[in-house]
Length: 218
Figure 1 (cartoon, one colour):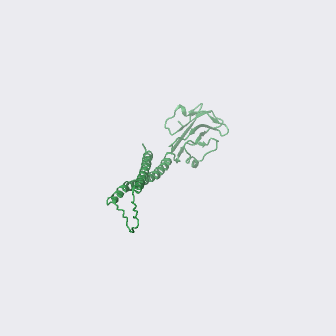
Figure 2: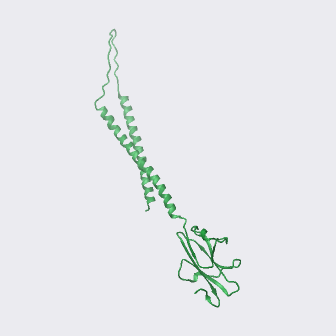
Figure 3: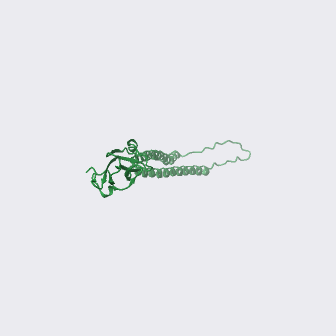
């Protein structure tokens, strides 16, 4: 598993914990409010009716048990803990989100880089794009994966040249290197080639074939 996947998984866990903590805090606040309302409803202040002809004053005192403060503190403790956890998981979630985005950008750049292609070719070799526009070396070095090319070698007119062979990044000639494709207008034998992903070096070699002398240059 790569770093991005790990960060995404941790971020999901943080988000779930964040929602659970938020629900816990709201539930504790609800219980505290319900308990407070219940205490107020159950508080009864007796009424005193003065007897006829008797005048007196009285003072009604409501005694609060000493352990009421302890009750309030114990009720607030889960809420305080919940708020602290909510803040902690919130920070983890935000940090994980920012890190995952930055990692995705870095991975995206490393997976699809624009290669700088070193180009080495035998004499007489030229490269063209799919519209048969010649590509100078400076443009070829900036080519991206998937670029379609025509690799060519110029033929010699009025001779018995009948085919050519063109190889790329190889030291041994194979049957697949032989081509009889010929562009009469440009007087070149050619083969098509697509730059593969991660390819940063093109060593192109080519030879013409004479019916009389065989492969020229051997």
